[in-house]
Length: 155
Length: 155
DNA sequence: CAAAAACCCATGTTATACCATAAGGTATAG
DNA sequence: CTATACCTTATGGTATAACATGGGTTTTTG
Image 1 (cartoon, rainbow over the protein chains, first blue to last red):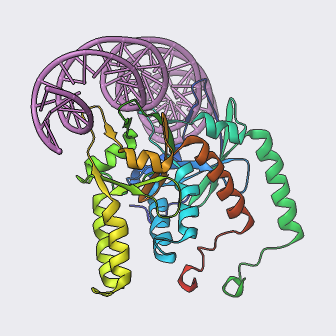
Image 2: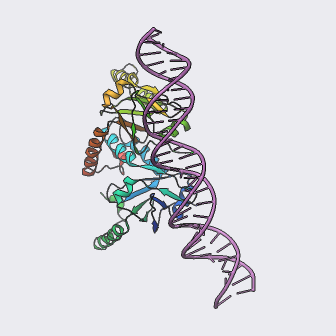
Image 3: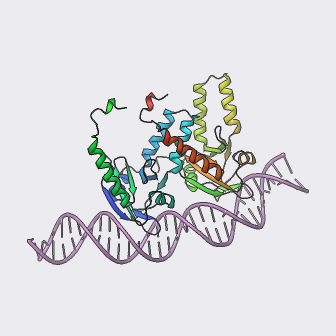
């Protein structure tokens, strides 16, 4: 029995004409162990698809309920944006999910997809876009070291 | 057996001459698993129909009882507004519900309806109105990032 | 009796479950 | 140390089931 469940690594898979793509086997193992499902949506901050477990999204729903009022505009806006865009993806017996036109178009993915682990979440990128993005991130981190040590005082 | 039940995704369905519209199959699955019913009412904040499980509405009733006084005007107003408008909708063998004139008119829906998942709730929109609303929300959220991280201190 | 609502059936489309194959990696036996 | 058998994973193709939607019929209701 595992204690930790993290989406990791960078995996390149083919996307067929129907939009089917194999979910990396490590990711599938997590889904199985947690007996949950994969949920994907358009990233709010980058031109890529983002995914996580339904479990995590359920926790988010609860957090939003607790943090904002039932009738608040914030709650309305957030839930519309997040859950309106998210979609459950179950994988078939061979481990594939079928991405939708909307998601593929948004991330500009045609025949190849790059899965990038992000811990509790993961992202799916167009290969060229990911290459550029990774270079950008590395450069930025080198220039301006992140400070995890003082995270409690962080703004 | 699922652990989480979230209304998600954005689905466009036809409304026929009788006012019948297919409830998205994912939504139906939730209703079945929870052995509850769908309840719809006019949104308090937007020109759309809002729906949820009868279960959630029951929880809301409890919340209102706890948050307001039995004889208070607030409780009176809230309960009148919500439960006076809400109505149960059962779906037929093919998964369709029959929306009422009142609801359709309020949301300005004629022949096409857009279901928008909101987690524990969902909304039903006129397609053009939803398109505008989504754009508005995206702009607003991007401009002013929500801060769930510090939710415990949130106003 | 008239209008509406619930029920039933039919159809085209789409997604999903399943099968087969290929490719890569690992362990075991020669 | 190498070759072979086995296992896992990725990928392509296909058949089946599920779904949305249109139309009609019966039952309920006012």
